[in-house]
Amino acid sequence: MRALDLEYMLGLVPVILGYVPLTLAMASVSMVLALIIASLLAVERVVRIPVLDRLVVLFISFFRGTPLLVQLFLFYYGLPQVFSVLTQINGVTAAIMGLTLHFSAYMAESIRAAIVGVDRSQWEASQAVGMTQIQMMRRIILPQAARVAAPTLVNYFIDMIKGTSLAFTLGVTEMMGATQKEAAGSFLYFEAFVVVAILYWIIVEALSFVQRLLEERLNRAYAR
Image 1: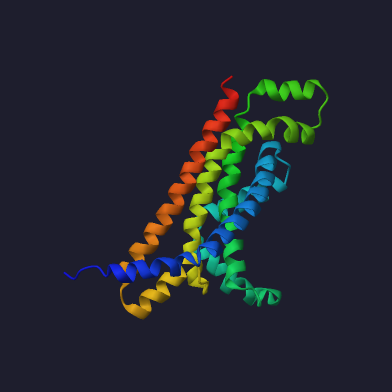
Image 2: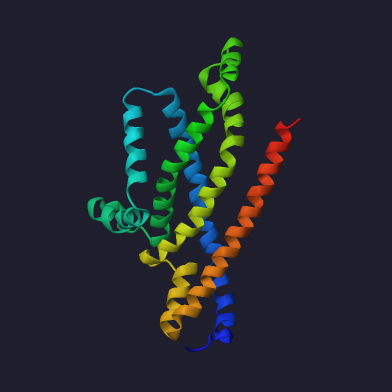
């Protein structure tokens, strides 16, 4: 059994760290877009607009029922063959599209559950003062639902960051892609993947800490 090449591992750390901004950027953009889409889907699932509701159910079912990697390949390799306008799509864009739609399906169900979980008296009070459904959702229901859904949404963001590791299959050189290239050049696969695993772990733990602070802050406001 050979000893670990610690010098190589330490030298690899700054190389991989150089690709952390791209990883976080892909996850952050995907999170913002997914949150917007998921909120719209969740509201629709609550109000249940005829015909549109069936399309939303189909959308959620498809993106929750198929692997993320398959969806990434579909956007990057499949769609350009059907729609010529997408032939110039790059790996980063395809990865963001896949992450956005994949996680928006999961987030929509979490947000919907949070909306439905708002006390019925809040709905009735909003209607009693003459609010429209849009006003009620924007001013009363969604702010309360956001408190309940926030911890779960942070978990999805963490999953998104880990999900960006699949972008290297589309030719994107992010943290995992850079690690794969370095490992292929040195043949020190174990050391390289241990380093990237630890870096992912550190990022996730940092976000978990932020999540705990967010939960404490939100709960403190409602504990009075």
